[in-house]
Image (tube, rainbow, N blue to C red):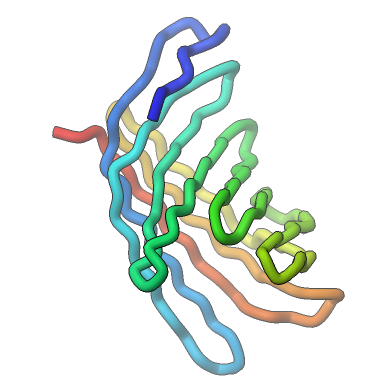
Length: 152
């Protein structure tokens, strides 16, 4: 995967990183946890920080590319693969997210309760707590933990 070169931010920051993504979801009294570990790329461009990685579905072997864009206390997560969506996380705000699949599309509301980012020289941690709803009906409460660090 080619890493875009830095635009107007000054320093050229392009790094190969190792990534862990841990998600917890509460729905209908049930809790589930998913974990994913991958290699990816981190770069900065036009005042934003980007993290890109690919996830392979263990059953179907389908590949999904995730692009996370961090800018001005807002995180945009774009998913491209069997499901295509863009979710926007901004603490205290609700944003719509369209899920597009081969079977059709679905619009959900993403209500971000909390978004915390800790940036260090060669690593970062992101914690997101949010609720998903459809037409006002609550679907789930979620927590997503994303950690990455420069590869050794």
